[in-house]
Image (cartoon, rainbow, N blue to C red; front, side):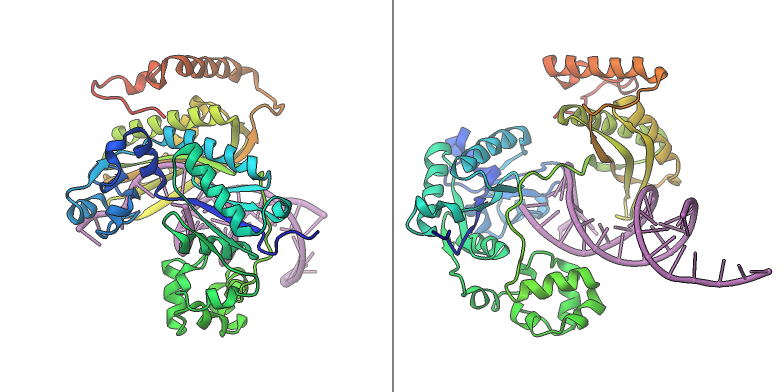
Length: 395
DNA sequence: TCTGGGGTCCTAGGACCC
DNA sequence: TCTGGGGTCCTAGGACCC
C-alpha cells in the first residue's frame, strides 16, 4: 500500500517561549506576555497572541513593545528551560515517527508517509499529534500538511494559532500564488525589494518571471531556488542528523564600550562562555572568528584558520586577542562583540596534542568539571575579577 | 522605534597547486 | 617569454531564518 500523498507534516509550537513560561506560572495565562531582552537594546523574542493583537511582534525593539502594550508582562528569556522543554517535544515527535528534522527549538518536519496504516488520512495524524503535545506537555502547537515540503511549513503558518491546515496534493499552486513573495523561504527584505523593482509582489507574479531574468538580479543559486518554489516544486525530503557547523557567543552592550582595556575584558568573558559551550557540546574547531559592531552599526569580522583545532579557553582567548589586534578601534564605541568557532571536529576524535599544551588542556578540563558541579561562576578568570560588581551570567 | 543572539548558506576575490 | 584554466581553500561580507 502506498503512503500518504501529503507526506510532509510541519509542526510549529505556538508562542513557544511564552507558553513555557505559562506552564510554570499559570497567572500568565490570558494576559499579554512578552519574552525578550529587558535591557535598553533588547528585542522581543516571543509574544503571546494577546500581545500580538496590540501590534507586538518578534524582533521588535522592547521599547516599542512597551509603548504599544504597557499593561503586558515582560520576562527575560530562560533559554536553558526552553531547551529542556524542546527536548521533551522532540522525544514526543519521535514516538510518532523516527523521520524527524528539527529546524529550531520549536519546529520540525516529519515524514508521515508510513503512518498510512495507523490513520485514515493525514489530517487525522496531524490531529493526533497536536492532541498528544497538548495533553502530555500542556503546550499548543500548529500543524501544516502537504505533499511538498515547504508548502507544509506555509500551511502550519496558516493554521496558527493552535490549528491544522492540509493543502491537498495538486492544490499547491492555488494555495501559493496569491501569497506575497516574502512568505517564501529565502525572500527577506533585500530580495523583496529587488523583486518589487521587477514588478513582482505575489508568488504568482514570481512564477511568471523567466529564471534567466531572476538569475541576473539575484544570482543563479537563489534564482533557481525561488523559480522552483514559485511553481510549488521542492525536491527536498525530510533529513535528520545534521551536525553543527559553528558555535558562537556574542553580546550587545547596553551602552557602547570604549577603550582597549574594556573591549579586551569583554572579549575574554565571551571566550570563556564560548569555551564552556564547546566543551559541553563536545566540539573543537579549526577556525576562530571575531565579530565587532561599532556604534554606527558598521560591522566587521576577522577570522583565522589554524592547523591545530582550538579546544579550550586559553587558546581561544589568545586567538581572539590576535584577531582583535587586527581591528583599528581608534577609540570608537563598540556596540557588539562576538567570538565563534567553525570547522568543527568531534573533540573525542584522536588528535595530536603538543607537549606544551598538555597542562593547559588538563587545567581547562578541571575548570569545566568544577563548573558542572558548582555553577559557571565558581571559576572566573583572574583578569575578570579585578573589578567588583556582578559577574557575567553563565549559561 | 534604532536594529538580540544563535545559527546556515552564498558570493567574490585572492592564494596556491597542477 | 609569457600565459592558461581548473580546483580547492581561505577570508570578508551579507542575506536570511527562528
